[in-house]
Image 1 (cartoon, rainbow, N blue to C red):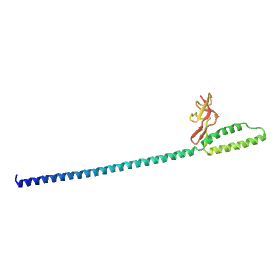
Image 2: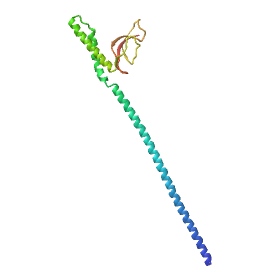
Image 3: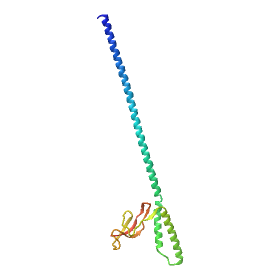
Length: 185
């Protein structure tokens, strides 16, 4: 091989090596760019996930706040229920005592005083939202009436309350004590 050929071959080999190095460096740059793009996509995905978590957490908080407000309102609405339940037997006893009208003048004065106390107690209960459940002549409703007896009375239609055995009471829209009643068959 001549010296010139040898130099040409050496030059060609060097050119091929340089081209290979350029390809390798181009490939490395492409890999780096791909990794940067991949990292960017990953950061975008993390951002979207965090945004979604934030929105969900905000919605959960709003639901919790609304639920606690409803519970507080319900608690306030029925706060006097336990006191009313304890007072109902007292009201029953007042009514029974007032049914026996006295004949003596001194007892009459005492009786009138008891009536005044009874009316005052009724007003207090009414101001708290307590109301009597209507019974006689009403259609029997198992949600507010408790049937104690069934009778046959031609003066009333079937399934109608004939007599009230014990008054029933409602606090706002909640039944505290159902009325004990006699129902026509």
